Length: 322
Image (cartoon, rainbow, N blue to C red; front, side, top):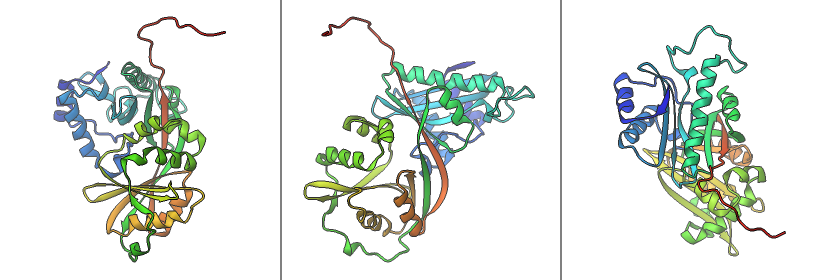
């Protein structure tokens, strides 16, 4: 039976210490947070019934069958940050010797998993969602299931991690054009994003400045940002967020200024810290630089996005010109 997650359900999960299976969703905060802390954060939000979260669950008696939860930071962009499907739950009564699909799931498991994702999309649409983001480990069968519910894979990401600050500090050689980002830099940064990002990816992350900013709002934690501005044009950007000593980094360098990649990377990696970078597949030079500086590949992910068709609340007619 599928239902909206209630306060009593959160208490039941705390008492039974469920779910015991891994969280299949890998939100941007995931590389810097422990899975146990993620679950505690989810139960806390479920107990306070926050409006910026949708959580659905299926139950087999008192056992948790599956769970999906999504959050929003902007109102129109949502991210699935918790996903526990029936097929991944130990001692699940849906798991049996029944015939299985090409994805390795029984018919009951497949149906329950599809219903969870489809119902979440409907609930998000009722809250005016336009896009739902879902990051999954590459190669999982659940990617095929997600595609059947409207999610489309737009790009791959590689998690690079390792210790920084073990190379000589050359920050004194940084260009004078590098400065801290200001609020008025927003549109110029969007122009840099358009210059650095393939058109197919911009469809998912944002075709307008507002859409792009909404996608950026899914990031969590305190952020520090720097830009490189030359002749009134922003040609480089570096962002860092810190969570308990682990630094998550992002970077963009204009194709006409590839030398900036080394400059901004030096600024990021000169400080002693453990760093983790989610690098999209269209940023191969960034991955090469990180690898050269001692960071190593830890995981690969697939970013899927579902463009939601929101239901019409009040049907009507509008005049048009022939």
